[in-house]
Length: 310
Length: 239
Image (cartoon, rainbow over all chains, first blue to last red; front, side, top):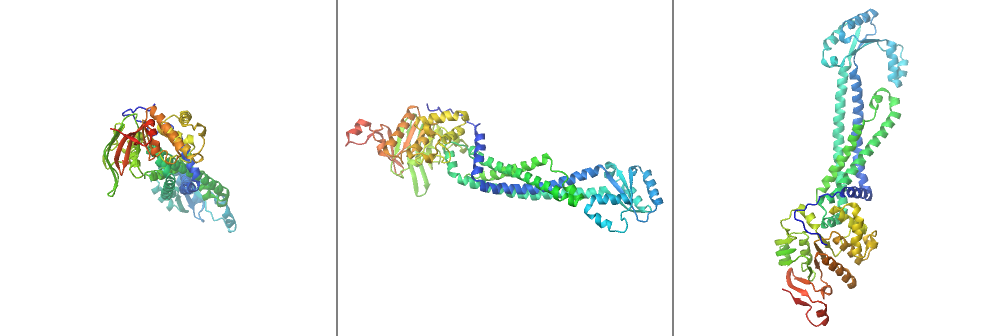
């Protein structure tokens, strides 16, 4: 029997079974147009790889900054001709000032051993020198709250005037500079990665537009049999999202490969700085963020193309 | 069920496909629309399916004025109408079953029901053994029967067919009309556009004749015994 017309009956715009249809169709279309899809996925992967590389560097620097912040340090270097009495006088002065009282004396020999540990490839250069070039020093640990407060400034000025003292270094200033660098790297990463991601989204839009052109006749048939625009466009949107997710996953895998390679080949040879830069891989939240970024770029690209009625 | 009130359809200043067409088709009727190529048959069907809007006049289908219908409502409206095309319009990359299953997806039928419904629709057109074939592996007559099964799978209120036998030989054409007759018996209103006079002959159905975009004649085809006598008019007056 023919169905009766029920006035006001409203069928769902996207029926329940449609979601599995969307995914099935999107996967099939990805496979059919794999060459063009590859271009879109490669674009997304490249932009996220670049963004990820910036994030990796800034994340490791940030981690180093956090670690150093926890143990803010003032280092007092003595001049080469400083006498033991002058050193004792400085020691007494530090003992009298509560903020700088937690101190450790580093002899010339200890400083040399430490340098050789940090800069392995430069140790030969030092060996060729007639005498140990490193001065003795005091390293004072400062509570981070005090370091940030600016209360140390007058004491440091006074320290610099004591006899035998050649230089007073305060880590906090260096850390603040490093922090600015981290922020700069983050901003650069987001700008470059963002521009590339937008370019990738437009590539996806063109790929989807091309696919829609190929399916133009099919889309027309779908419309004639009562498919809503959402049902017609659903597989294309999912296709874009899948391209974005695959691009994101590929970017993370490539980044991890580069990270492992860097740790294996670059870090041992270049020691300290490279050790900081490649200390750890991105945390799960940032990995998920990269893949989600790919997904959003894919969605945006496909949304751009399906907005136009083919 | 289908009302045309003074419908005119112009594509541009110089080309008028339909000119002041008025007719009415009641629920459960089986009506042929005939006329030579370019008479306006396809335009008339496209207006019913709301593929286009009239330049003037009103088209009312199923109690709904298509001129006033919002674009978002069109898909839901089309789900109540079965359409059969001369060129079948099957999706070639999908199997026969998938072509039918897609419609069921659009209609929101649960996937587990698809096989049963598709089988039943294909059985009605004697093609249940070709569920897994692709359209291009089928003959023209078989493809048309799949297209009819697709149009009938939802038991539509109205079944519209545009030259459904245009590419078929006479025997197959009669089979196709027989399927439409059965759908009509189940309650669907049928509107079949054809220029094949043999198909209309002896059908005993109402016939709207179009010529240059106007209804030139409106009759009931003579039933078999009258036509068989020969020499007399093919049509009787209908009023």
